[in-house]
Figure 1 (spheres, rainbow, N blue to C red):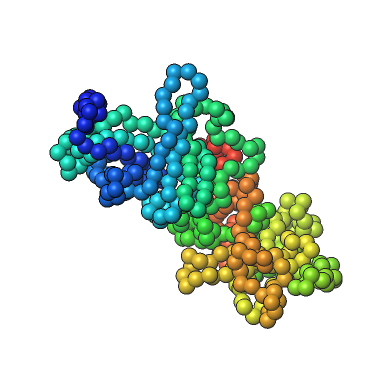
Figure 2: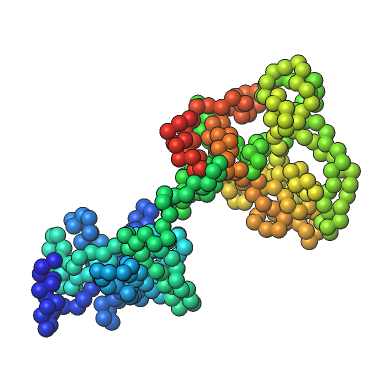
Amino acid sequence: MTDVIKDVQKQDPGSAFVELFEIDLPGTNAFFHSGLEADLSTIQFRDRLSPGTTRTYTAIPIQIDGIDMQAAGGNNRPTLRVANVLSTFGDALGGLTNEDLLGRKIYRRTTLYKYCIGQSGDANPPIEFLQQMWFIDRISEKTPLHIEFELASPFDLAGVSLPRRQVVANACAWKYQGASRELSIANQHGGCTWNTYSRIEDTDGTVRTSYFNKKDEEVVTSSATFNTNVSSITEGFYYKVTKSNLVKINTDGSLTTGQSSFDYWQAAVTTSSPGTPSDTNANFRRIRVYSTYSASTTYNAYTDPNYNEYVLYDRGSDDDHVRLWQVKTTSQVGSAHKATPDFNNYWQLGDQCSKTVTGCSRRFKSSFATIDGSVRRKIGEKDEVLPFGGFPGTRTRS
């Protein structure tokens, strides 16, 4: 650093000033420079941690203001302004949005152009001024022309809560399926690794699917065998009981009373005196059923949304697009109220999470067996470490 300081103290440093920026991203970092006078070509400089590695910095309209050092008062909060009219910045983020940058580190490196790779002063380690690092704290301004970030010093504790990660009692803080391995690294957030398409590996290595709704009720295929005699039950078997007096919501908003459906149950034990199936009867566990979506079928919604119908729908040509959906509004065939499952007024994702440790356990501890002629989820759960976000300690406990 001594050489570059001597250079800038001269009346003519003999080389242009270079300002380099590095944003810490998941998987890989993004490298930019603010342009070399009128030249917007790329610049190569040595990596800040591994000088033997070459980093290429892309020129974009980027400017940092408010950098100063003071012995008294609060820490300064510089602003970083980036042009919002080019795709260069967005493309370098690898699928992240501007909001995803909040909380990430940004490094500022400054040197003279003659010390860049390919120039006469290139050296290992690189010759540069003292490096600076901030955290991207918030978006302070956003216009069609530019976006401005406010930066915070690592030592700026204003407004910081300790512990930094707040835990809400009995509730998972992770985004459901946010860290699924089906997502690209750039799009993975948080710690919930439950598969986007509800796939889980069985103890024998076979990949199964296991769907649950936001009440942590398992949703199983309607093609399974359902027994109607609940006077004697066998653990793991499915049963159904007629549910009467439902009120259907028609496509025009009118109501039709006296409708019937079923309550579906899985036996939690084997007994000859199970009692009447209910949510408070420990001998039974409530389940729901889904069918495969058909454009020629009307799917019903009710005033009690627990009975709204579920479908499995393939949005693409391969299994990676198969998701569980639940109807929100009765979708009638051949009418303006018909819509295929998607994020719209008629459908919502059926696979949701209660954000409780029970919901986490139901999913990650799923175990399967052949019961009543088909492979299904067993009542008993396997020993598995939970990634439940509300209680980080479950990482070390099953």
